[in-house]
Length: 362
Image 1: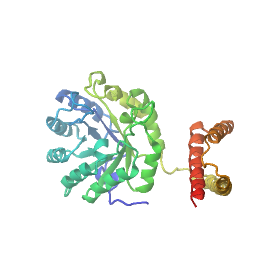
Image 2: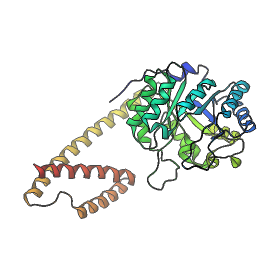
Image 3: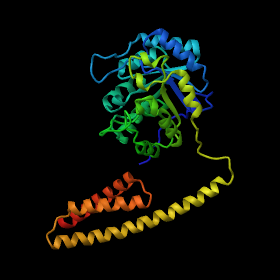
Image 4: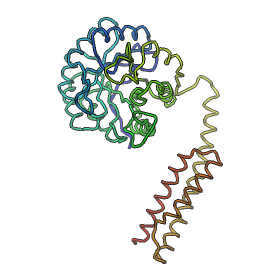
């Protein structure tokens, strides 16, 4: 179901923006010197529009650095006064939200763990009522689009129109190169459900290490996302949290220089005509795919009826293992991605078993 939020485009609350939205700053605010030194270097790059910094840092377990607390809000005020940058921080409950608003913090974001709790989001939304705050909502830790949409709707229903989603990846359930698995298909689904919502990417929390930041940032722009939130610290080696994923301001500039910004449309007058021709070929092939799948369904039903007549189970694991090995091998020969082939036939087989089971239950 496609929904429509009552929100303002980024250009309305950041009228001087002329590039994708870029938010940068340290994971955590640590000292006044660290905060201001980092901010001044970032402000020298006019591609940076908002300075970020964690004031409250809820950790998985107690005992590690959990932020400097409210004093950090005063440091953010100093950044705004001395650099002209908008400033932002994470709020995890109603008290954080009240303090940040009273301190004049421009941008508040709701973290992944908070987004996962409708109770927490509603408490924050209640405090936001009657304000003109800029609010950003990170995806929940699990890839639940409806939970993410629900959090955005709660904030929007509180009257917040300056609203942005942040893709920061999801808790992985297996070993991956990433700290948080990007799972881009969830972002695509969010764009489909909320087409007028700006979405930016947080490569730092997806990557977990500097070496992957460029790859993820470029992927975000290739996907048509509206900007980036990247962690930057004056000296990451001394950072009190997430030192492996933060960049020095000069290294951030180098990364930004390498990125290719994609656009929804091209200046080439023949581009749309050629694109339409290619898309029409895709449409025709998709129709053929669906027709083939429809024919396959009829055969699956016939197999189901035959198994029922002979009192044979719907699921036959040896046949399934042989089929999967065979299809993956054929896919490789046709230059298809192995993971794609496995997922495709897993879905097809699950639906085949479902249909055969229904026939047996008739």
